[in-house]
Length: 328
Figure 1 (cartoon, rainbow, N blue to C red):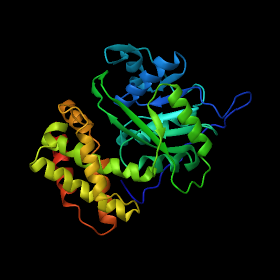
Figure 2: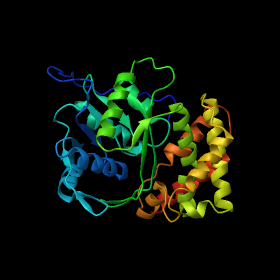
Figure 3: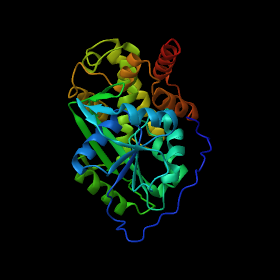
């Protein structure tokens, strides 16, 4: 993360709304066929039926996704997969990793119209701002995806818990997005996706989940452990908690106060996950996929540097994970 980075604005299309009820969403466009893309795409496709869910891709990836198809809990998914030359997106879901967000935004740009609403399912605390700087802050809603236990191996996904999407807006919404939030929640619930309005303050929830990921996701990758193993007393758990405290501190500098009680509430949340399951970065390590260390330790380190602080635990995790990736 570069705090002074200039974000490119991609050209978007003027939307033709003649004859359409702009307050009701009927279709969704998804960028990214990873764990969350497959999980929620499958839920929506099975609930709404054909023609309401499309994935977009380009080049070799488009050909591969059209030919290989995805599987979800043993079912073959008959997703519509197209390029970016079709109808404008009503609801646009980004379901990629942070490292692929710029490419995903460039791909989706021709489908973003005047009334397109955008939702980010990404981890971390920077994607909404990044998307808003590119397409306009009035298009993006805030979202936390939490509680799913999805495991993806190649194009096959399995899960027992679909988790839930929490949607919201900052307390001071300068862009009058309340109607858009209502429309997206109505669509997701109608489409079979567990989703609800954030009961508290959405930025606090986003930072709370970020704190948890900084701990559990990175430590499970660095130590090669499961949800159950990382909760046992020892070095891994101590490292996880220390990394989370560093995330809390930079969050406070950003004006979001995640408390120590919040930290232990999130640790208790880990006990609800299958003990033999692994978070996404530990799965990345097993599959030798690029991880999200930049979105987690990288963000903590950048913010710590900006505020004149030290974050030694996240520095160690960052270096360890980067070394792991370099040796694959």
